[in-house]
Length: 74
Image 1 (cartoon, one colour):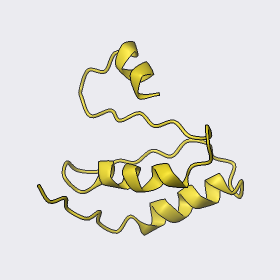
Image 2: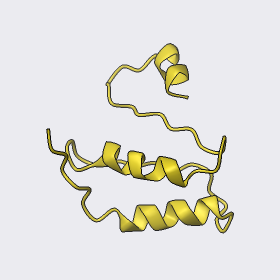
Image 3: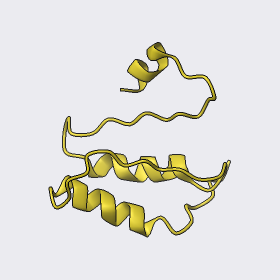
């Protein structure tokens, strides 16, 4: 199965890198968009840029998301 490339996510990547460098006050990056435009792929690209133990991601891909699923993602 081939994956579609993310569409114009360079601003999010730059913002994330600034956050990781401590150049911004924000500590949460919300990634949103229509289904199929590459949000999950973007998360896969961002994970290796995290310092060890410095990032957690939760993928709210379902309408109903319980505490157990959230903890499993973390």
